[in-house]
Amino acid sequence: MINISINNQALEVKAGKTILQVAKKAGLPIPTICHLPGLESRSVCRICSVEVEGHNKLLPACSTVVEENMQIQTQSTKTVNARKVLMEFIIAEHGGIETLNTQVREYASQLGVNSARFYLHDQKLKDCNRYSSDYIQLAQEKCIHCDRCIRACRDSHIINRSHRGSASLLTFGEGDSLLDDTACSSCGDCVPVCPTGAIYSDR
Amino acid sequence: MQAEIKKQCFSVASFYESAESSYVKEKQIIKIEGRNVSSFEAYSKEESFNQLKNIINNKISNTEVLESIYNSGLCGCGGSHIPLLKKWQAAIPFKPEYLVVNGLEGEPYTYKDYFIMLHYPQLLIEGLAISCRLLEINEVYLIVNSAYKLAYENLSKVVSENTNLLKNINIHVLYGPDPDLYIVGEETALLNYIEGKRGEPRLKPPYPHEKGLWNKSTIINNVETLSWIPLLLKSPERFKNKHPKLVTLSGDVKLPGIYEVDMGDSLERIIHKAEAEDLSFIEVGGISGGLIPKKLINVNYDVNGLSKLGLHVGSGTIRLFNNTRDPLLEMSKSAEFFKEESCGRCTPCRVGTQELLKFSQQLLDSNETDESISWLHSVSETMQQTSTCGLGKAASVPVITYLKHFRNL
Image (cartoon, rainbow over all chains, first blue to last red):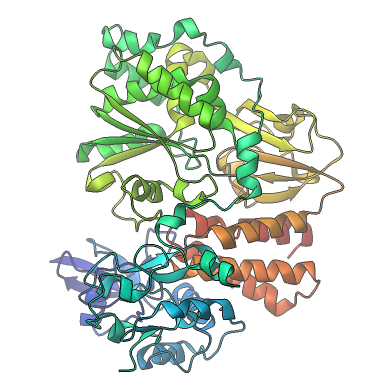
């Protein structure tokens, strides 16, 4: 066991746990989007950012392991401001708030962010959706690159991020393969984990 | 339209494919000239590997070498400016297995590593061999920018001609990906590239010295950093109360090229040598660096001096602009660059860089509002606080320094 403090509250917690895990146990939940228990943490959405004394940058709670005497702030102004901007980024990239899943919308409303001042995806991304299979469909323009589908897939080569920067895309297999041309067995594991409906099945 | 879609929907492998950019072309055609690089010029070919031989023949002990490096205060020249020994010491408890030498030099308008690898390849190889002996490493990956063909050949030649001195060290001289893949120059992205994965930065911690190449402890050093080692052993007096460093001076100047400067000197003195014409403003630290007007050039060129103006030394890149140039346009070019070059992995950088570009477009159209300026500052702060790697952290520096120094915002 080690001693830490969260929001000035002293706590004795199990060593080896992440800030997210110990905060949840202490009844101090931290919002998450890309994190999903059971999948390795990638800390790509950064909505779980927290302030830790001694660090000049915010740290992702989902992957930062607690250390002795760590002093953590989960609701400081700096933290909340960053979360607000990131939530707006996510809404902007998704193209709105209505079709995000309930959990994300709830976090958004807790942060008081209901819309974005800009929307990003252009029509061109939609043309990539023809790579869908009969069973699993892709709505590229909704993707926020949380990487949940990439991590949930049993085969690490099937779903990939390709290109880079503003042109980042989800693609299948090597090159511009149709999903049907990859080793995909249509198990559907990638569908329920998607928080945006970018990967879906209408079967 | 189909062709366009095809271009968009490409694979992981094609992350490394060429997209001809002006930066790549420039990397390929540049004529590299060393000017006032006295420490390098004073090191003759005949002296090559003398310092390494002294170590092998026990004329200098490892402790003495480490002391010399400590006394020199040599810092990482790739942009970190962390004392070299501090970096090494952190790795020692993990028993480092690999040394990765980063010769990608992806920063546009930067050619100091190219200069070394092209004209003084033996210095780099000697420096890395000395490092390997000190760190008890026998596997080296030397990654060279793929536009630097001649440098690659020169390095390979030096390695093959000195197999006797380099026995017990396995040096892999490899080309990097397409030179316009800026992000692969980030140290953990480079590790992924060497492992054959998509060149995205890794989450830190674990740091490379804890879990690096193939999960083994790895030290990553810049070309220039290691090349200084034989020089500081030969001429310790050059480092007495001084920190020499190579910079690339370019832009609207009569004498562009590589200059050896003393850190802490005034920027004015440093750029004076290149003979600027009608100087109006300066970009310090490369494309991720900041812009300052001419009136601020008496700043000290070192980490402390520059940080007061929101700038950083970076990889020692300085570009000078004359009075026909527009700082707003240069800042917008940087914003566009980062929008393209973000790897796409983390939200703050992928979306934030698009926001920066949108804002610079607003400035170009004179459409900015108090609200959009305040939003821009929030975006910049969030990117600096939460981006995974240095790209996202630095991407807003050009726009923030532009607002500060040219618009008082």
